[in-house]
Image 1 (cartoon, rainbow, N blue to C red):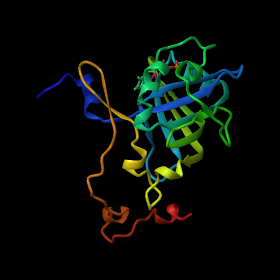
Image 2 (cartoon, rainbow, N blue to C red):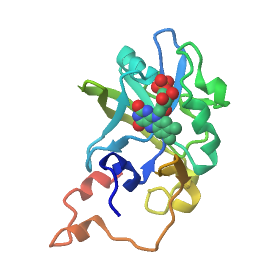
Image 3 (spheres, rainbow, N blue to C red):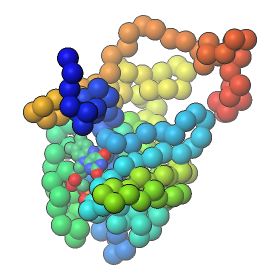
Length: 202
Ligand SMILES: Cc1cc2nc3c(=O)[nH]c(=O)nc-3n(C[C@H](O)[C@H](O)[C@H](O)COP(=O)(O)O)c2cc1C
């Protein structure tokens, strides 16, 4: 079935993450963002797309820092309350009953109860007329150890990361399911060697 090109996001299951920031007076801000991605492997870069109006963008510009918290599906009821566009002086942490989780390197806290936290520093902004692509560097990354599998990644059953599929009516919140398929990174290369393997040594 053919669809209008703007519905391209219906075809991309999207991660739903909380981006937290603080303004110059120290007021905390948190909002859900799904237009975000890790930039290639094995860089430490992330990219978030934001409309100009976002308090999150204003705060990132004010102090060059933000935190991405990856929530479990059980936090789905915190998504809409933090997305409702409250005035900048109101902290969505209070509105949604979210607990700030102190960060190690940056000033903004993450969100308590998430399964992973990325403390980020602004690297570059790609400014378009209507929106901005923010490129950030992860300067501290932490996982909830109870949500990890034996190889150091998120276990789908334990972590149940919150994601969404979109349709004509709205956002359908989902999570991931293990399909019992695994390949080492080396499988992508003719000689079976992963040229980036050393990056994964602790
Ligand atoms: C699931 C979900 C994902 C969202 N993703 C984005 C996004 O990627 N970029 C964006 O600009 N707004 C996004 N929004 C809208 C913002 O969360 C919303 O406008 C929020 O009020 C922005 O808060 P802020 O002004 O404090 O940054 C999303 C909303 C929801 C519910």
